[in-house]
Amino acid sequence: MTEQSYPEPRLTRFAWVSIAAAVVTIGLKFGAFVITGSVGLLSDALESLVNLAAAIMALAMLTVAARPADEEHAYGHSKAEYFASSFEGALILLAAASIAYSSVLRLMHPRPVHDAFVGIAISVVASLVNVGVATMLLRAGKRYRSIALEADANHLFTDVWTSAGVIVGVAAATFTGWQWLDPAIAIVVALNIMRIGVGLMRRSALGLLDTAIPEEDRLAVVRILDRYAREGAEYHALRTRQAGMRRFVSVHVLVPGAWSVQQGHELLERMEEDIRAALPESIVFTHLEPLEDPVSFDDVRLERRVGGRPESTA
Image 1 (cartoon, one colour):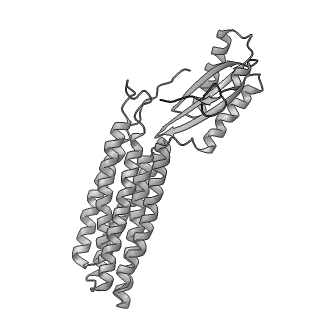
Image 2 (cartoon, rainbow, N blue to C red; image 1 turned 180 degrees about the vertical axis):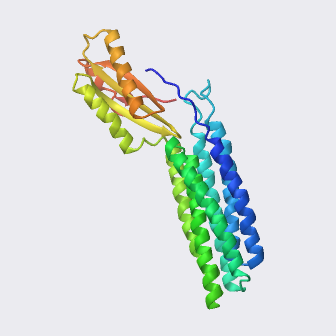
Image 3 (cartoon, helix red, strand yellow; image 1 turned 45 degrees about the horizontal axis):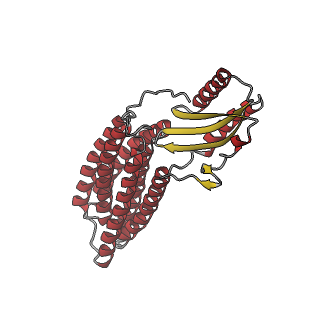
């Protein structure tokens, strides 16, 4: 196996932008709440507080993820991003619960909304800030396969939808005089936020459990291996996993036993290079075996077997 090093992109700069946007929107939205007294705008402001906490956590974990491999972490620190996305998912659920609680109280004790159009205008400005930052974070997250940035972007987009719902609720309550519309729409928004939070936590858990790379990427690897198989180099035990922006691929390659060590080595070098070209920033492990030896096929299963029993991992 040969390993190729890649310069780590400075993803922390995106987290700093997210922090700055959160500070700006917090000020705007709390100002709108103070002016109007709308529980919907209060829920929107609380969501921005969560955005700030999540952005700070993302900054911390992206800083850890960028550290190079060391003796204690031979495969790097990229999984730290999953802690950020898990934390953000938990904060989203907490925000949803607080919004729902405040909205139920307001339903029981309705209060009129004051200066609604001023509050709406401020909320629109804050939403435009979030849309711009979220779009930038989502593009960066997909480009660098950073779940921390994608989680932050999705959270900000959720905030935008929250603001849209709040604006509708405040406007409807103002025009109709039905004060219950404001907290009722806030409850709907809280349920939607909860759905996003659950999705984020599920994706983070899958990442921590060494989930395989996306099917599209795996098929790209299979196409490369099939090409070499047509040239006489068979393969089995293909296994993949994703850890933040890093992808790991391992495979056993079977060649004629009469080949020299040099021939086998050169083949694996070409194969690994082709896989890394198809999947940049991937770590590729290959294991060479003689095609004619039946023992070569004993380790096709996920667990290695000794004497017919799974090998102990203790």
